[in-house]
Image (cartoon, rainbow, N blue to C red; front, side, top):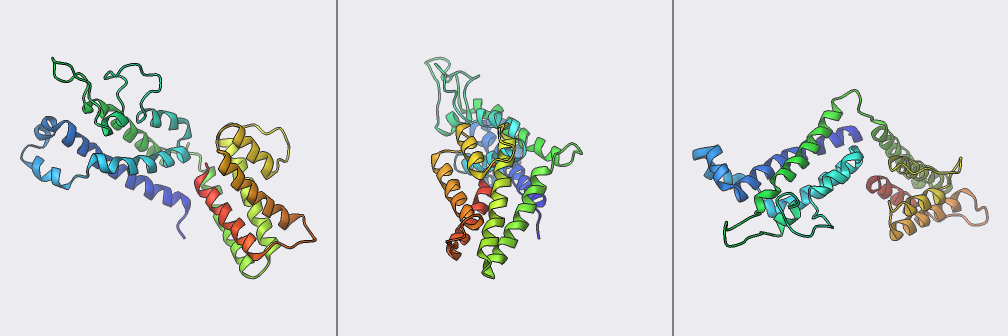
Length: 264
């Protein structure tokens, strides 16, 4: 079975390789003279092998952003800043031009010189985003890298597999209770990731869910979804008059698995 650590390493290597190709594609599309000078006679053939920056950047950005959020959360805002247009921007200059502008084909021009700020102004931002991804790789190779979350994720996967097996053998209450424990532990980890302090010594899923919503880590639909999972968990743990159905427990396990893979 592939561990989360191995999976993250593989995903990271693929993202870095794609990022390098996008960097070359950017130079070819928006800095063609420099591209031709660097590659000489090989430039024409190289262009044919490169992806389209406009078409392929967004999928790469979305995956890279998710990975940065998980493995380098303290740099997530910087990673996003290199892409998004500044909200307080009054005019466009080479200093505040962003990758989002480039993808939208934004140019600032007057009569002379013909273009003041062109799409090549986004190049330093793309280079910085790729550098951040490469710094994540360095963390994997450093003894200072905190693998607590990755180890925890492996444990969660194992416990959810056990819950599935219990549910398969019709031990619905036990399966739901185990899935509920995983959800509670994961939400506590997410709160810790975002520096959210919980006053209660032993907070419930509802307490953790409310704290994440108040801190704007999750939105209302996510909050309602997790609350629904908590209700099923409580039915498994506390109610003796009504047994949870097999479908409810299956929904709980699937919901917990989704939450552990998408909420960090």
